[in-house]
Structure formats: C-alpha cells, structure tokens
Image (cartoon, rainbow, N blue to C red; front, side, top):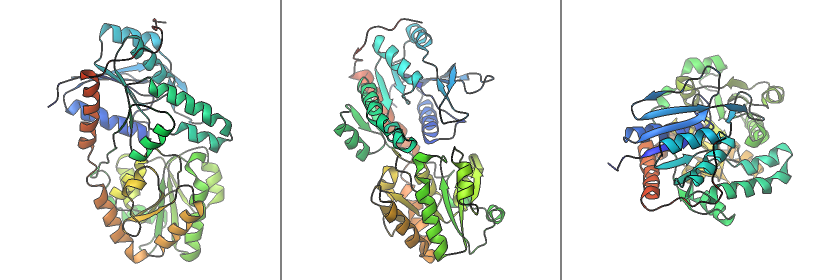
Length: 393
C-alpha cells in the first residue's frame, strides 16, 4: 500500500448528476478512500437543502452554485477564492486535483498556485469543440487558449486516451499523462436484460432495438443517429429506436422521430436494464474525450457503431464487436449501422465479444494508476507559482 495522502478533489459535477465526468469522479473518490487516502471533496451545492457529508477519512465541502447555461438543473461552482484559501491555509492538502475548468476549478487553480500546493487536472470534456454545434464557432480558438493556459499551470493533466494526449500536445498542452477510465462490469452486464421492459417499449423478440444513451443536445450529432435509424428501418421495418437522456433537443426529436421511445434520464438498475435490453448501440458523438456510454454498452453485451474516437477507438473492432468508422464521416456511420443491423443473426456473438473486451477495464486498476500520478507529484513535484498570491475575498 502506498503512503496515505491528503487529497482535495475539486469538481463542478458529482452524483446524483448523471454524466461521464460525475460518474468517473465518484469512482476515483471511492477508489482512493478504499486505498486509505484522506479525501476532501469540494463541489457546488446543487439544491438549497444539500448538506456536506463527512465520515472517516472523507469531508465534503459545498460552495454556492450558479446556473450553467444550456444545462437546466445543472450548476457551476461559484469562484470561492476566500473559502478555498482559508480551507487550505488551515489544513494543507498534499495535492489538489481539479476535474473541471469552470469558475470553481479556476479558483482552485489560483489558490493552489498561490499556496504552492501541487495540483493536477483532468481534461475530460472538449468544450472548445462544442462551440461549433451552437453557432459559436468563432469561440473555438479562445476557449482552446483558455483551456491550454488553465491546464499548463498544473503539474499534471490527465487524459483518458493516448490519441487525445497526442492531439493536445500538438495544441501546446504540457505535462500530459494517460489515465484511462474504467467500467463496472457487474452493474453493466447482459444478465440485466428485461423482457418486460422490452414489452413496454412495444418490442417483440423479433424487434431490433437500437439504443443511444446521452444528453439530447447538438454536440451529440443526433441528426446522424436519426438518419442511421431511418436507413435501418427501411431495411428492417420491425426496428425500434430508444433514446435514454434529457436535453434541449428533446422536443425536436419527438417531432423528428415520433416512433422512437424517449425514456428520459435513467440511473441505477433502470439504466442497467435499458442497456442490456437493447440489441445494438449507436453512438454518433464527435465531441467525446472518452465516452463512458460506449464502455457501458459494450459491457452490457451490445455491439457498437461509433466514430474512431475516445474509448471506441480503443475497444471497437470491425466485424468482431461492432463497427468503427472514420472520424467525422457521417455517411460511413449510417452505412456501418445498416450493415451491422443486417447481420441480425451475428449480433449476439458480436455482443459477447464486446462484453469480453471490457472485462480488463477494472476501476481498481484505473485508481491505482491515478494514485501513482498523485504520489509522484508529492515526491518529485513542486507547485510552480504563475500568478500573484490570491488573498481571501
């Protein structure tokens, strides 16, 4: 067992939020606690009644939250410079880990540097790529510049894939380390298949159920998903599209594809059953750094059609456990989805291969790798001060 660390984790999203970053941070926190480190979790208060939790080795500090544009119900953290300065001056952590680059993450970076506390960051969301999907393409370069400046002030920036590490390095990011993500292969598994759920969807044993899980928003490239499903349905009329998630495009999708099942947000056992009760998973997003839903679908026994990006580029093998297409080639995505759907008899064997490909992705292995990076900062790294000291507000 490595020596125990005092780790302060700063994040603007955490369960019960339902997104890949929240889930990943929760797994890292649980894993570090299991390895007997002392954890301080700093996050925004999502609801007025929220209370910070504390128990042996764990302290949760809640700061004020502010609404996040385009994400109803989601809040960013207020840049609580004074709170953080007082906390870390009174009880200094060995290392600060910042998972998000919003106002709270920015404040944590300022205070960490001013107090010379080693700091690591995560690059988990391609915010600069989102701008193209909201008619704000001119913001892409300024956002990228901000992200580069933000991450280069830390001693480590952790990224989930080697491909992303190379991309960011070309853009001037430094101190990049690959720390993959895991998947819970018990929570996401074929045995959660629920024929009663399929019946409620209106699906028979012969129905091909096509699933997509994620936020119903422009950055998820959902028009390509609809085009792919429509092409599948022309070949196989007894097909059904199930969408799990919420977002600003929900009303538009209901009108665009009235025959689809919009299941809303699902979590826990319900989410497990929704994955396992489908037959094919389509993931058209072009903005993912990893794409947790890909590994969750594959662990659930679903073959996947995806672009060569994120976790799909690491796990999907054409004709074995799904279909991988060139990044950004929407036409090829539609063709691959139709091709896989026409191989209905082979889908169970493809799904079994998908399941086996995720079995090595244990969270315990990921946490151990993450832990090594934090320890290396406390042994060899010293925080580099790039700004004037930040005083309590």
